[in-house]
Image 1 (tube, one colour):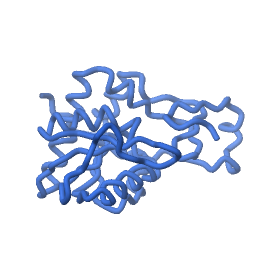
Image 2: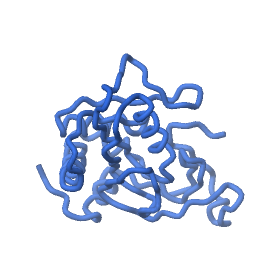
Image 3: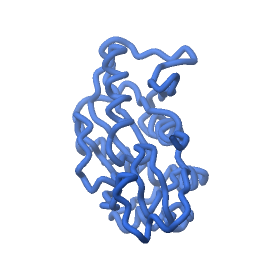
Length: 198
């Protein structure tokens, strides 16, 4: 497997997949941004997914001493990344789904009491979905060893309550809806994430 040794190579994988978009986007957090990372386009290529998650697996193994029993992700964005990370770590992978605004386990998924879990996301912006998923893991008897994501677009500012391991950090400016710069406000709004516009 190819080792992607620096953040520029990671971002080039996104560029090559046409997954680094520019425009006016509303993120899952509700914040607005002039850039959007469309992880689904990166993960649609199995070879690219294997490369990226293999590098993330190596980074997790370097930084986390605890054995990982289970990979847990929030749907929708974390499902494919979580599955591939489970495959790379040779452990099961499950996911939480949003029902009536809350993340819950469905489909017969369970977390064994005391299982060491790796919470896996595709992109972390504010860390809200990650924190919700981590809380869900803990409420279902799991122990969260760490969180991992392909891209931390908070530039390292997001606090998810456990160590957050990413392949790359980006510091992409985000804005509240009532504080948009004029050039962003002039563009039509797109909502490419998994939660609808409110």
